[in-house]
Image (cartoon, rainbow over all chains, first blue to last red; front, side, top):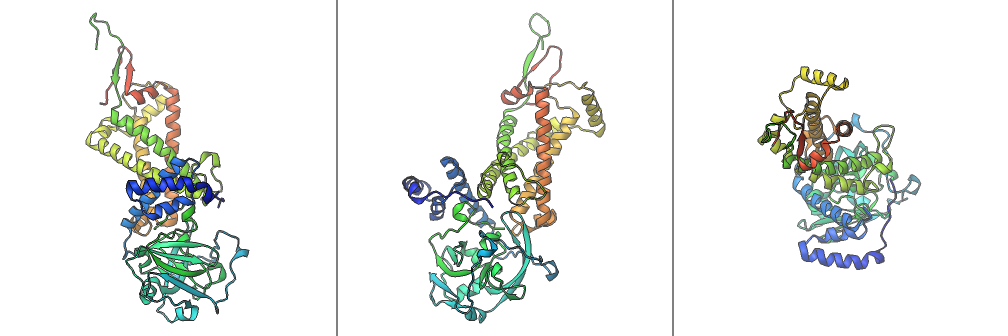
Length: 250
Length: 217
């Protein structure tokens, strides 16, 4: 993947203030669109950038309408699992974070009743689900894998999350971050995965816990998750803030 | 038509209705955006052992290309829908592309190769009719395979109808190749008969004295 040039925030600030005012007044675009604009470099042309982000935001809404909470992603027999499974990240395999599962915890914040951090052992006490689904990369390739873990809707219920909130955001040990719309977060196949093909997640595939969401493109399935938040403030995402479509549903 | 003195002379007739001209040029812009951004997306994970050189692509990198592709798709789809509805309801397809027989395609193809096929303003020869129909089908295939690739879960039935997620990429690639192949032939023909270019803008074609023309309007 090619590297992207990021606009330095202080360079873009005056332009953004102007833009924010204009957008706020004009069409009440969500905070999401504004946040997305801050780190964007889709094209050198300012006008093109804005038009493309407006369209991307429009496509978010179209995809939310197309999304069904009950429609399931196709599942496959174990014989279809891709072997070997491909490593993919925004860094080399050598830089995969080295995490101690015994001391690891996931922080919980935002619109939830219970903000107690979660250890691996405690996550294992919750009901577990398994799925063999296709992981589709935004680049066009795909592979089939098996993930098991806690359905996110079970977890959200357990921590007393306000499921009327708009977003569930995740941050990771490798400084990756992403976010989901609430309907997708509550989809039955969205899981906090602890195992890959019957064994604890290998470091390459997100040890000790990763998100697995087959109703979205692969980059939404964040690895090495360290925090979860339920919020109405658009959390963005590592790639989303650089221009990937936020909803990216399949 | 003759002038007052009774001698036949050249005249101008409208051969392309306004709606066909507008949708043609909007489609040209949308198609260039779709194909060039599509090539950039292809380059992120090539199907064949080659990539499209960056100067031929649009978007700069994958995110930019996807943003272009999924913005231009609306222009392509809305414009295409207007054209197809007009084509069916306004009988443009029926008038311009039919009747069409294998025999007439073969005859016209042979005449064209022998450089004996003449261009009559407002009339498509059988080879042209076939090409326009085939590119419309490729266009339909590109749209359907594109949707199937975009939404393999929500539109699973469409993806299943075209094979699987991995085969749909190939279908989309083949449809693109068919469309680009058409554009190449189309542009060569325009180069051979350059008078067709201003006609596609103004809609009007000059009909030489004594020649019949078939206005499409």
